[in-house]
Length: 253
Image 1 (cartoon, helix red, strand yellow):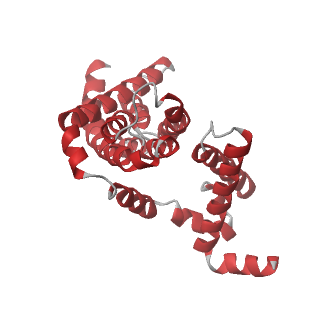
Image 2 (spheres, one colour):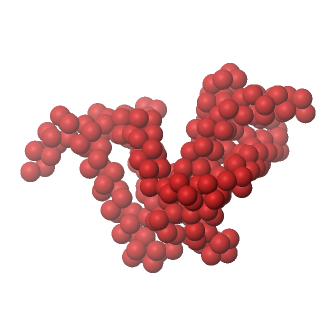
């Protein structure tokens, strides 16, 4: 039976990828339900497991693509790529109610700009505190604090070094994981219990994966609203970070 599975996975790499992700999700939610009593959401545990597996795959093969460097699991590279990610985001956004979007209106737009600016300033401030003085480096790390997608896009646009781009991605991942863990714990305190507050929350925080997982742990009905504005947040960050925000950093520094 094991030989048959290995042969199947070796022939159909994407099937193997779905099997690995499915098993990781099962283990993560089992840990969440039985060891943390639901206080730590399964999605956050799944991401931690994914990071561990990526490290093991990279350390074992000496490659740079994590577990997908192992030939048997190379389908993870496709499954985790931009194509399926964007498809999932678009599919999630189809669950929104247009009436709720109209009611959010101006507040949602303000949340997007305020969220991008606060995250960028926080990330840039940390970069300066650690001794970075080059406007390109500061902007790239600040953009990474916006989201781990905005960071590398900004770094590639401005010509940042690979080390700085890696730091920007790390900053975005930390923000995403913290959002997943903290959202269900603080939802009652901030009134996160309706579509409008979910849209404003998604606009302020911005990391689509973190917002979606955090809202799923709070109330699954709110996920489409938070994910939709979080997606706009990413697009706005990509527009602002390498242009207006970079010019502002260069003027200050």
